[in-house]
Amino acid sequence: MAAKPMKRAKRPLPLRNEQVTKLQSGEEFDVLIIGGGATGAGCALDAVTRGLKTALVEADDFASGTSSRSTKLIHGGVRYLQKAILGLDFEQYRMVKEALHERASMLQSAPHLTHPLPIMLPVYKWWQVPYYWVGIKAYDFVAGDRNVKSSYYLSKKDALELFPMLKGEKLCGAIVYYDGQQDDARMNLAIALTAARHGAAVCNHVQVTGLIKKKDSSGKEVLCGANVKDCISNKEWTIKAKCIINATGPFTDHIRKMDDPNVKSICCPSSGVHIVLPGYYSPEQMGLLDPSTSDGRVIFFLPWQRQTIAGTTDLPCDVTHNPKPTEDEIQFILTEIKNYLNKDVEVRRGDVLSAWSGIRPLVSDPNKEDTQSLARNHIVHVSPSNLVTIAGGKWTTYRAMACHTMDAAIAG
Image 1 (cartoon, one colour):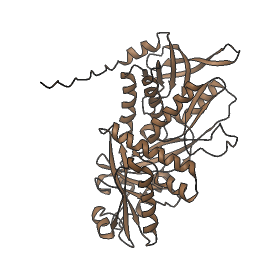
Image 2 (cartoon, rainbow, N blue to C red):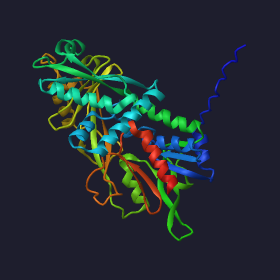
Image 3 (cartoon, one colour):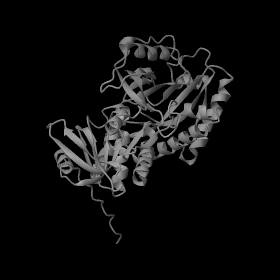
Image 4 (cartoon, rainbow, N blue to C red):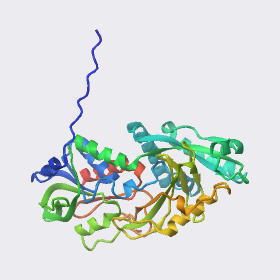
């Protein structure tokens, strides 16, 4: 008789009050992570699966900030690869390759929250057909055996058949390539819940109000814990930890200044606005990429939960808990969309069902002498008092960022 396959016992999910009790126990944690976005949750999962006693606190709710306000894409960045090739920039090339590797991992590990998405790049000049075709094929090539599906060329007739609202005038054809799409807020929550199932003390609505230091054997002041406040019960207590990780996204400098009030700011916040339009604006299973907007960025036009997402912008902004899109940003996206849609399609302001703004935490690298230039990739920095800061990066590479952060924390 064939042996029955053993059912793997599902780890129980602790209630929030159990997690709070765990945090209030007075025991020392190996690592305390501040921030419950994609990066913080990723760090918690990485740490706890390495066997470290892990705690994570989030002042608001999981994915309440930038992590739920993305373009919903899991991608390597076609634009970044173009810059890497044209500028012979190996660092940028490596960043794209890493992101494409992580894209494959996310699609494989969370098929209930992710799926491959074909994206059409319409071409309106004949010389651009081979130019973009070579570029997109290079994107496939860099992905290697982790490629989602091969890109292909479409004739004008086939492109308009697939995307009827596309502007047909002067259209030469289109190139279709594949990236991934995800439910970003649910993905973030799934990562945090997985960390909790593995034994991490993960808790939302717990705010860090101060960092605690002690002198080590050499007389150097090092971090040993944090004062926190439960924003629901208003109780305050201290969490002891051997290592503290700052994964607070746009609020990176707020925690860094808790550690050292004189430290230079490294975060350059940028507002990324998206709008939601009715579903009839795009086909159900295909997105559109505008490779060159009037301000030199790219705009995506993607199907999302039976509606259509369009974005994004990139403008300097202030760090706030609830960033709001401005009317100018919404109008900019609508204007750019009009350039690619049939003249018969009237793009109206009243069609905008909702809009959101996410703060992109672009950072200058404190590890380098030239702190003026912004890091294209994420940075991991360890302060003199051993505060480990992870900043920058993108949603797609959250797992690699968590791995690099924990490596730095353990080495420190």
